[in-house]
Length: 157
Image (cartoon, rainbow, N blue to C red; front, side, top):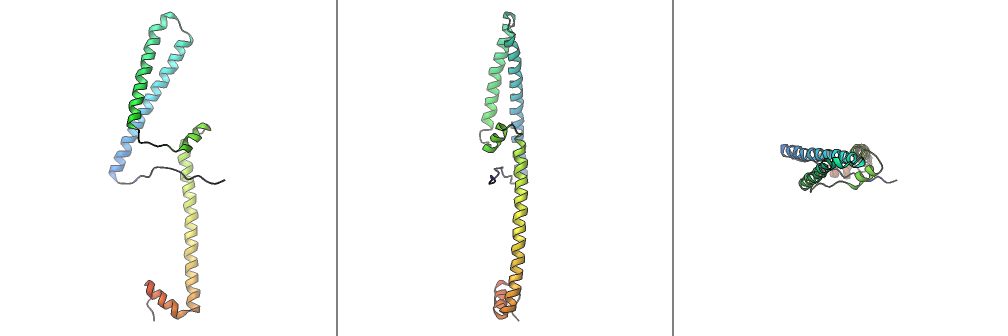
């Protein structure tokens, strides 16, 4: 099974990036609030419709108007968040009934594991280079002295 790369946004910059992230968080909070109100309104609408009585027509009309207003509010939030892209893998998590926040956690865990793996390779290559230079110095001392002089490591004797 091949691992899919994680597609998380990169955060760069100083205080400007923090302010931008906070502004974006406020927009998400606003959207979340509107969605929660909309879902609650639909739940209440379902209750009214399931036990509809002619006397509840006014309440039904009010809830329908709240639905229209709620959809308009959600559309306004959508316009503020038009430049957000969500990795398709997040939707796969949701379709599988998993928490989408696990995507970020698992991406970070995979990145840390890959980082450790690459660090191990780098350390191995450094050790190999050091041993190779030692052995080459034993076999070709003059050539290695010139090499080290060119590299600026050790001046030739």
